[in-house]
Length: 604
Image (cartoon, rainbow, N blue to C red; front, side, top):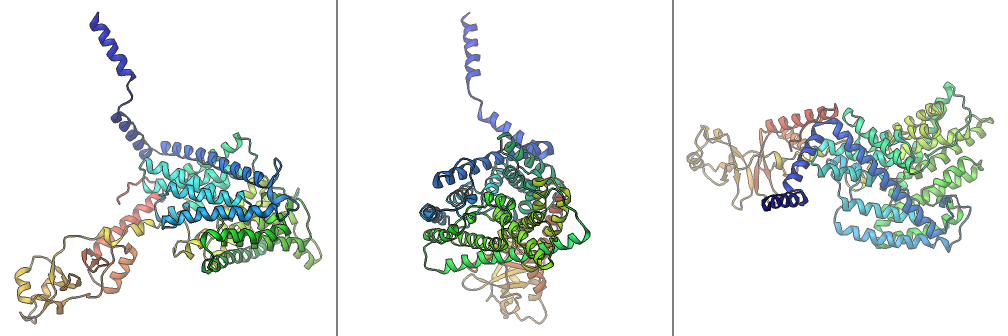
C-alpha cells in the first residue's frame, strides 16, 4: 500500500514539474526545421507577421490620433489638417513637440551609427533589424506627427511591421532570403492595415522593401497583406475610400494627357526631394545644436499653419476635404507651395517621419492644378478635375516613394474604378520612369545616398559586401624577408615547395609577392635580394574589399594571387583569382535559385 502511494505521489510530482529545457529545445528545433523545409509552415509564419504588423499599425495610429486630439483639443473624428483655422498660441505645440523630438534624436546619436530602415536592412544586411533601432524610429515619428509636423506615420508603420518579421526570422534562425521575405511581409501587413488595401500593401512590399517580384515571396507577402487588412476590418477601421467621378469616359488621347500629368508630377517630386535635402544640408551646416533644430523647425511651421492648417500632419483630413471641394486655382497653387515648404522644413529641421501620405496629398493638388490650368488654356474642361487629382495623387507618390504599382493599386482599391485606374497607370508609369531617368532615386534611397550609401533599391546586394577578401582569403601563407638573398631563399624554399611567397620588410609590412620559379632563373645571382624580384609591391587588398572590387583588382593587375593586408600593413592572407570567381559564380547561382522560389541553405 505504501509503495503504491509513493509511486502515485512520484507520478503526480513528475506531472507537475515544468517541461525540461531539453524538451523545449527539441520542440524549437522541430519548429525551425519545419519553417525552413516547408513552404506551408513558412506561409503560416508570414500570416502571424501580418497579424502582428496590423495590430502594431492600429496601435501607432491610435496613439498619434490621441496625441493630436489631446494637444490640440480636437473633437472625436476630427482631423488636424481639416481644421478651418488655428491660433498661434495653439500652434506652440509644434516647437514644444520639436524639443521632445530633438531630445530623442540626441539620445539616438549615442548609438554612433545610423538607424536602419527596412529598405537598407534588406539591401545590405539580409533583413537584420535591431529592435532598439525600431523603437527609436517608432518614437520619433509618433512625436513628430502627434505634435502636428508635416510628416506621416507610414515609415513607422513599416518599420515596426518589418522589424517584427525580422525578429521572428532571426529567432527562428531562418535563411537570409527567408528573413528578407518576412521583413517584406511585415511591411505589407502594415500598409494593408493602414489603408485597408491588401493589394497596395503587397505591392509596397515587393517594390520598396524586397526590391523584386519573386515567386518565393508571392504567397507569404500576399497572406501577410490580407492578414493586415483583416485586422483593420475586425477592429472596425473603414477601408481608405476615395471620392471618384461618377462616370469617366476614357479616350485614346486621355492616356497622353495623363502621361503629361505624370511628367509634371515627376518634376514636382524631384523638386520636393531636392528641397528637403537642401534644407537638411543647410541646417546641418548651421551652428544649431541637433536637439534644437526641431524646435526652430516648429517655430517656422507656425506661420505656415496659420495661413492654412492643411499643411499640418500628413494631410488625411485635407485630402478628402479638397477632393470634395472645388477650390480656386490660386488657392490650390498656394496650398501646394505651403505644403512643400512645410514638409521640407519638418524633415529638414529634424522632425522624423515619411512622405508617403504627404506626397499623396500634394499629388491631388498637382492634379487639380493641372486640370484647371489645362482647362484655362484650351477654354474647355479637358479632363475631370477629381480624376486628375487622383491620378496626380498616385503619380506624385510614385515619384517620391518609388512604388508605381503600389500607388495604382491604392487608387483602384480606394475607388473600385478600373477605368480610372487605367489612366492612372499612364501617369504613374511616366512619373516613375522619368524620376529614374532624371534623378535615379526615391526619397528613401536619396537620403541614403546623401549619407554615402550607393543602393537604389532594396534588392539584396548585402551578400556582395559580406563576401569580402577577409572571408575568402587563405591564411597561414609562407613569408620571407624582402632583404633575403637568392641563395638563402633557395635553401628555404626549394623548387616544388610552392608557387609564391609573400615578402615582408624589416618592420613586418607587406613588400610584394615573389614567384619561387623566378628566383631559380638563370639570370638571378645568389647575392640578389629577392625584393628586387617581387611583383605587386604596392598592390594589395583590404580585408573589407567586396568580391566585385576584388575581381576588378585582379582584372587591373592580371595577377593570379593578391595579398590581403590589414590597416597596419601586416599580411593577413592570400586570395587567388580562381577561387574568387568560383565563389562569385556560386553566390550568383544561389541568388538566382532563390528568386525562382528554391529554398537554398546559406553558406556564409
